[in-house]
Length: 215
Image 1: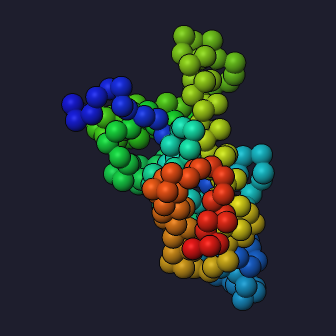
Image 2: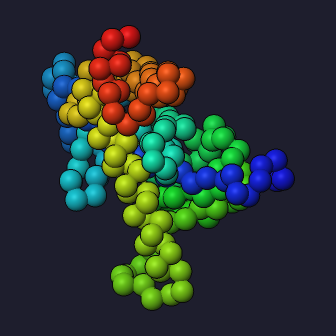
């Protein structure tokens, strides 16, 4: 506390972006029996239900992105897709810059342990309220604004990231270590591209892919 002036504090959005595994899917009946029916299956990946997109087999990329005019990844990790959501977000907290004040999250992050961890890091966790909608309490409209800001930041960053690294469908790697190396390496490269553009005084939202290809 007291290390940064309140006026300089910022917000960030946290999400767990799904990435499909390379090759086939290891269905649960085969997995329980210990049977791998095809050599293309990445047995280190896992299953998760992706909102309105149904079930998917692959990985989760827990990620924190700035809520600002430029979407900068601040911290990231990678786990099999079946990793518990309320465990994944705390994993990236120690790597966040101390200037953050607000952490905008999904309803899956409305977890007492995460709120305690955020408070210890001098962060305010903001999530949608659990229960049936519509909510009518005094904080409803404020949470709606924060939810919109979070979605805007995460969706735009995801679109930009997929375009930069041609990973809109499946990852090109197999196994946890190789997939971590690919995806977390890509996050690092995206940070370096933004830093390079900033040093040149160039635009931070356009021309990123040509800059990356020219490197």
